[in-house]
Image (tube, rainbow, N blue to C red; front, side, top):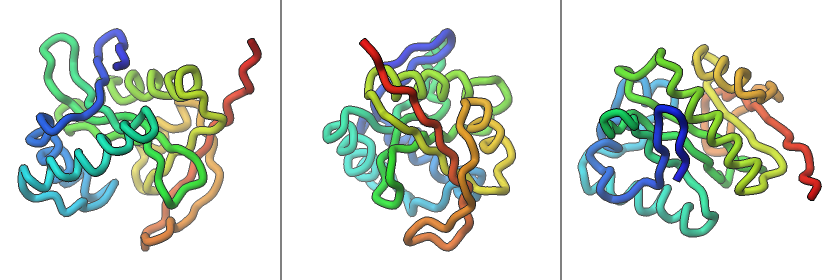
Length: 172
């Protein structure tokens, strides 16, 4: 679990299926990230079990649920993802539009970057984002990631901006 001033990030569970179903069917999610084809609670539970839960079990990290500390409301997801289509782990995030513009995405993502560096011990962190998603491009740069190249990921058809952040080696 990761805590920030206003947020708690914890691994996703099957109990988060209703929230997951809502989030991945937001028009903004479909436009900027893609249509996951999740249409029912069963689809959502299955996507969580075979995606984030399986990844967390295998690697010790995955996408996490982001909740407001004030009221426990689930507002989005943020975490680390290891994709077959990328050479290194990337940071991923998505939020319900009602919670945009409050600094939550940066607050959670900055904590995830620190987690990737300090707890997971990654040497490099990637970020991928649609070239048209201005807010997400700005967020990755604000987090310290640098633009590497415009590419089309394997199995995809759309252009993607690839960002990266090298972590300095740890000296004990």
